Length: 204
Image 1: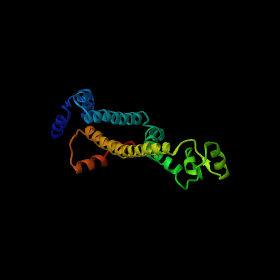
Image 2: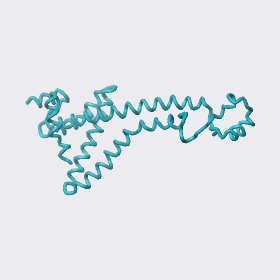
Image 3: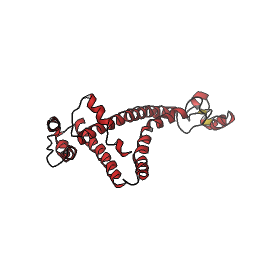
Image 4: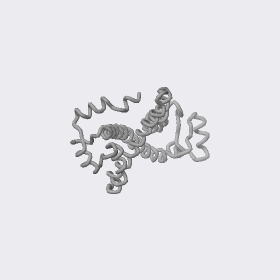
């Protein structure tokens, strides 16, 4: 009885003839139209996560007699993709590694505007660098500074996303399990019991 009241408060759901989760999903457009700003984005992202979990369950039903295929399919389609997504911030480390003072890729190098430092004319630039065994890069130092700023922004954004997205997905998995169990609001102990007996664990 308490669960029905909780569900009703959380989405005006009517469980008659449908389970809580199915009813909640059917109310998606109604909820989405009433939201705005971040709440609207959350509603949209929640639907994406729930749809992905539904696909996992549907795949499990279709491959009941072939657990190996199910594990391989979910690993290739979801787990590996999720891992690659989490590694995106590493791309932001490539630029600092390339232009680190002791990098192993370029060795000694100068920017295309380094004639200001060397005090040589444009015509002498190539010869001077060749004689000193210094690699002349095809862009100015100012260009690298711009890329460093953009790279820093990319690194910060992707790092935040890589941390927030897994937490968000985990949060929605807990909510998904709660809706399937007919609960929308739970205390910590109930959350623990719910995840301990998670229906997703039974798919292994």
